[in-house]
Length: 440
Ligand code: PXG
Image (cartoon, rainbow, N blue to C red):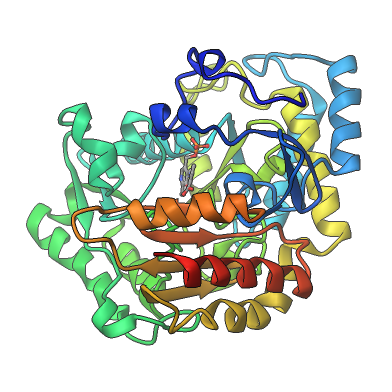
């Protein structure tokens, strides 16, 4: 496609999480991608500072993944995984389980992060019921958490703007306080030193509801969508301890953190904490084909494998759970991640990345900078009476300058493909600095 489409051509597609009328009045269209770059319909090269939407961890249109998908779609376009199977789904699950630390050895496939979260919450509830603790029905999320847009994920999510239009959501859900306290942890490099005790908020909810009613706590180890909130040192460890103390399951939502984003294969590996359930998606297939995966520990899986052998143990699944083409994309992505050491490459770039993003300190309107692995959040002061306007303007100006960034409100989020090099980090951060300096 070489010419811009007229606005009327854009009318039918109701775009997700987008100001449709604003976008359609001045569209930004991507038509091609390769490696670290997108190409726009007006022929410009755009440096991808966000791995698409935090998913294209090995860079775009990587040959081995493209080839694997092409071959599989011609060989086995679809195969049911209800009462049937195909070999690659079993192979992928085994390979993923081997990569995940601890005994998170069983994998349930979904098509998205939202479905992975809803699946994890259902596993948690059904697990307690299996064990005769069916009164454990409460789910605990966290303020500013994002767990997708299903009713389950929305209920445990903590972003008011995403929740308010949709009624009371799931009953029996409560939320921990979030960990972002700018007076204490603004401009922290990596994990803030202050704030481990914020995990004790779980004790408050245990006191309020009684532990015997609580099934699970779900958190993003590093909160992505709400603006890159980095867990304080010791915080996640403390959550694990409290969950253990009261028999509450701990779920890490690693839809963003998984597959190398933090400089380790998973956040669980990065922080040395074994949650009971881990949700993933995005980087699982390098964003190529939609797919999610939920990992559970042996004890959970085993608790389901107790009734009559011919009975279905868990009444849950999607038509496309373990879809052959998605499975092929994931297997090829995994090969590439391992061949190029991408799942740990973030660690070797993290110090350089940290220095680069913190060089933005002191620029106009920058009120906080946060980073971990190959992720950064740059928070800008909102315009008076126009929350989000500054972030939006930075996004547009960056795009005009050949950079793709994310803006959630007035927070700029960066998460480039893990193949990025130092000079390209300089281009990304230097370009953003120029935009911030020129902003009215
Ligand atoms: N959990 C987490 C932690 C996520 O970040 C989901 C679940 C839902 O995944 P699906 O595949 O259903 O979208 C997500 C998704 C952004 C952004 O820019 C983040 C997400 C999606 C789109 C944009 O912050 N995260």
